[in-house]
Length: 262
Ligand code: BJW
Ligand code: ZN
Image: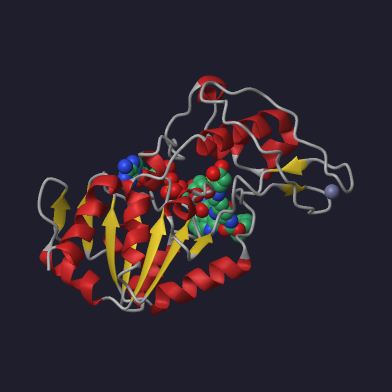
């Protein structure tokens, strides 16, 4: 049976040893890693104007074609939330862990920049970024004017900016359902997953493909997989350890047990 570690207990010793001995770790993250920074997870309910919508219905090319002010306003509300947020102990523990391991890559589904702001250096974004929108027509990158975070509340509909090159609509720089993931990042993530000795899957429901395949690829290639999530997910079947609790509480304790209590 898989060992289940609850966050009130000491970390499992075999996981602590696996971390100490690891030569190559992949840390695969989802929205839950940013939850303790106040960023709603993707499948949480949203507030204000957005509470009437499912995120899955807004994150599609069809939604943008149908009602671009609604979708652009939602992404601007989320971008403002991220600008006003700070990395939490989970982001910081991941950045600190990299200092102890010969090779560590963060593969994130998140569209925020909190891993980078916590100090992580090797970060692959599989689903794009809130901070890098581009023109729907010609692909030209759009640069935001330096903004003051101001939308902590309900948000509002907003017109997308016009492209400075062709006048077309600027769209969020994220990967919507039905769109291809960035090929370089996906290929690199798959290759790293198949080469690592330990993979952490943290704060993800494991529902969205092809990203959800990454822990499975790692397991099939012989890596051990550790999950950190308050709830049971689709990925539990692929893991060696399932640590049930908040990432911001469990990760600092693991780091402490692996490197500060030798
Ligand atoms: C905590 C915590 C704490 C809380 N500590 N944890 C194969 C099979 C079936 C379907 C498909 C398939 N291949 C492709 C598809 C279709 C589709 C798909 O997967 N659909 C599924 C829903 C069934 N995939 C695609 O369309 C992808 N494209 C593609 O495959 O192209 C080729 C193709 C084209 C056409 C047809 C077929 C193939 C693209 C997927 C793009 C996903 N984009 C989004 C939106 C990005 C922009 C935005 O943010 O708005 O990415 S969807 C959304 O889900 C977002 C996330 O990155 C992603 C994953 O969500 P995540 O991170 O797991 O968040 P949650 O909210 O689900 O979970 C949070 C977890 O945290 C929970 O478990 C909590 O318990 C936990 N948690 N607090 C630790 N403190
Ligand atoms: Zn353009």
